[in-house]
Image (cartoon, rainbow, N blue to C red; front, side, top):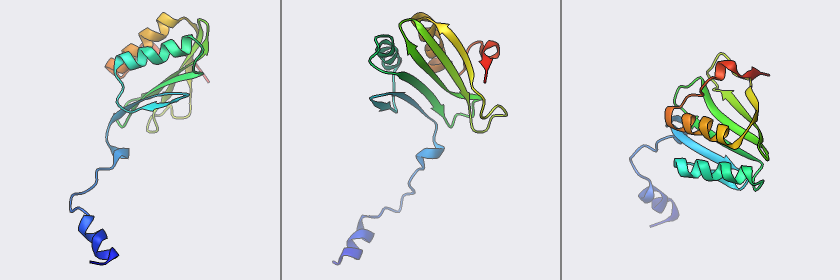
Length: 129
């Protein structure tokens, strides 16, 4: 069996699902990302941010048809900024909604709410850039 026959032998008749189209959640920090995060992973990432061991925490819900599909936090020592980024399909695409001077507990509230409900509480009261 030649090389080309082996390639054909290992090819499946099953269609490959395109991950780009499937809904998924992703948690990212400086050290990498987790595509199957738990709420404990989110809290741990926020703890690393609070301790200055990472520069940012990003939580994204991709392909869920949401208005806001990414939130991220930056900062340190209880002076954090939370940013909410509209999805590619949103009328607000390209804008950044933000709330600054947040403490660790406020961040935990926003991240837990976004993780569980896929919405950003009070985003209509955030500042915009």
